[in-house]
Length: 128
Image (tube, rainbow, N blue to C red; front, top):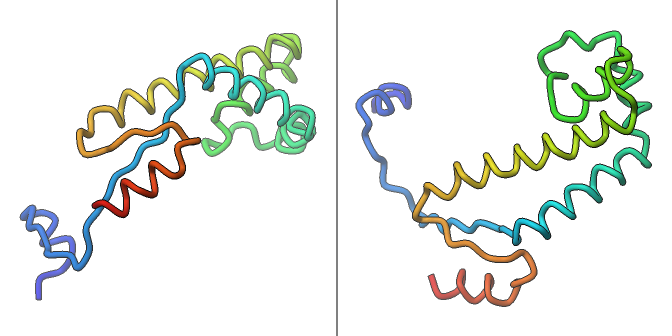
């Protein structure tokens, strides 16, 4: 039996004993942005700044080059006020969410639902 990597290089498709059902969850943009803003505020209230301060000595690690950390590192470096850093976290998170949606919208097999449509989602899964 060929190795997984050999099959991958030859683009061989293996028969699977299951079917994939792709479901995407999305909200209207205004609702999504409101939730992102609220979530950032909650994270700040729950100690994100203290977490970032604890990681500050390791700020050069690539794993910490993420939304939230980058902006608060810039605040700690004196580049921005705390308010500016928080607004930038919100804006960069919204931008990241848009990029994710753009990427996933290319997959025509994904069936999109609002997250509150639980019954509709379950009915869709059952019907597949």
